[in-house]
Length: 75
Image (cartoon, rainbow, N blue to C red; front, side):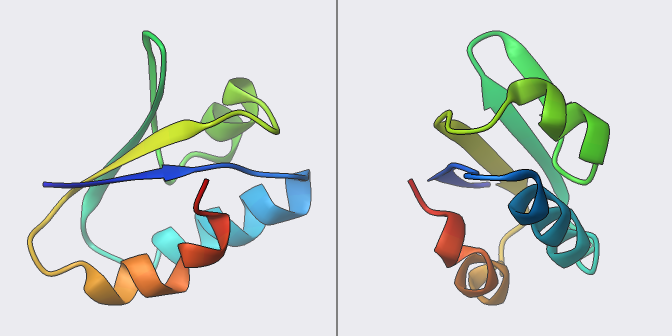
């Protein structure tokens, strides 16, 4: 499992993030406080809000390529 803190500044970034992570077979969750949503769920991420620091959990071993692609969202 790998973890990373991310944040979104606008809805377009959320859409781009979902399109990017959906290309990977890993299971991923986003967590803010006690709320946990699937990282591939557009509506779930919208529920977490914009300009919040969100914890991304990736349940996979070889996810360096994914981390590079989403590094622009690092908090």
